[in-house]
Length: 261
Image (cartoon, one colour):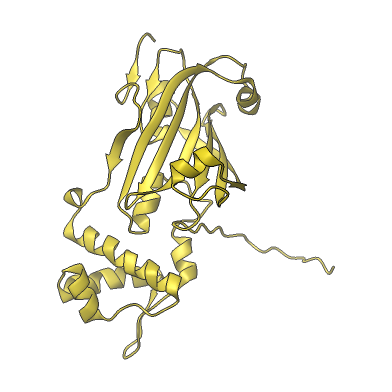
């Protein structure tokens, strides 16, 4: 393919995308900022502030606030009753970022009302290491790009992702916040499955510095394998998640008969 650049070539600590107020509508801004107060109420297990206080804090009209409240009520996140305080359903709030749903980290953070940014910290061509090649079921040493990216919520690092994307040759570069877009552009294939294995680790010095967390703190991890519509495994990733910003949930069906033990 020659020296091909996907979304800009190589970079170090490059800001790829930013979710700022200048690019969103007034309604979306009100919705996002209202979600901040909703998260605070859920964390503190208190009722949401009253309409007049929220109007002052959000700098909006009464109708704009009521529209935003109605949307969150429709999602089940808020419970409103005539003459009673508005309360938050913490379970419904968690359901907005379900673990079995796949969407970009920037969208995930936006769903919770954060201003999100993503930084590309590293992107280097590299022969695929043997241990990752075994997981992707390919030969060791074939072309890949090693990447490291960091997502920020309101300026605080909350997610760190590193991994390898398979490439046709070592000259192709990938610089994009979306591995799904990169794989589609390079291979002409869509990723349709992602095998995600959750876990937890204690942060060492380097990881703690990247996430701005104390050394020895615990973080959730996700090991990821991306599979295309043809069944090819085209990327491997490993993510570290700050536990204080996103609470993941997943839904399991209960199927009888149950064990009597």
